[in-house]
Amino acid sequence: MTLAESIKALGVQLGFQQVGITDTDLTAFDEYLLEYLKKGHHGDMDYMEKHGLLRLRPELLVPGTKSIIVVRMNYLPPNAHMQETLKDKTKAYIARYALGRDYHNLMRKRLKDFAQAITQLAGEHGYKVCVDSVPIMEKALAQKAGLGWTGKNTLILNKQVGSYFFLGALLTNLDLPRDTPMPEEHCGKCKACIKICPTAAIIAPYQLDARRCISYLTIESKGSIPVELRPLMGNRIFGCDDCQIICPWNRYAKITDEKDFHPRHQLDNRQLVDLFLLSKEEYTRLTEGSPMKRTCYEGWLRNIAVALGNAPYEEPIIDALKQREFHESELVREHVAWALDQHLKKCSR
Image (cartoon, rainbow, N blue to C red):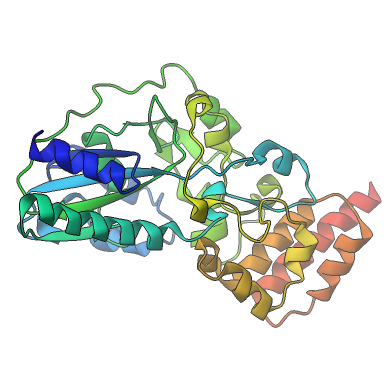
């Protein structure tokens, strides 16, 4: 068994579902990134513009890097109830990747263990662990390393498992043989993801305008959600899975064996009203060790207020909104006022 084969086998033993290896040359993606930034499709994610092409120059990010080991880890929990929750407008829909513990912490530790175990095979080597916290293009690396192709929804798709997986990478100074990128994409004429997107954020095949994306609006954006997009968000309060749910390749999605990715606090089946009335302390306890802490309490209330505005008229919903009508946050007050106005319009029809 070659060193590369041994490294891949070791990665699988440690809990990654696939391991690929590529080089540092990402210049083929330069035009795509520059055009994306030029059009402002990154919204308020200033860090993307700040780093610019450095995201495509891993050898400059970590001098001495010769190879990049890319891994993926499945996260789809059992009994995901995605369609059922989306249809029940009184319940909160949370992107399925966020129901369990924060994947950043789990994958970062797993990759560190992986790098140290590689030392036993190859001797001392320089490396850097990358899980979203380092300015590199993980999806471009995954495509080059043969883990899948870039789908029309801009996610990495894999013929065997669909797209419900996390990506991570090890930048190393080991000179390893490269895997062959997938020669072509396999979306064909399918445009299901484009048609299903609630806010029309997938503006064309392989082009996503983050400013319209529910994941961006509910997580990355810290300001007011555009009024015209609020009715389109439904009951999605943290992220969105629609373009994955509809993707034909996800019929092959595999359920994760990682218990840490399974739902905590019954977050796959919670009423909007219950979550909206949580105190800041209760919210902090609920989201401890979870990806959802990124939105902060103010953003949490903002997002749920919009969902409550989209919910059917019910007295408990109106009562809950009125309890936050004079909240100390102007952002929360604005979205609560909008939600109450939505219900007023429903009553007047």
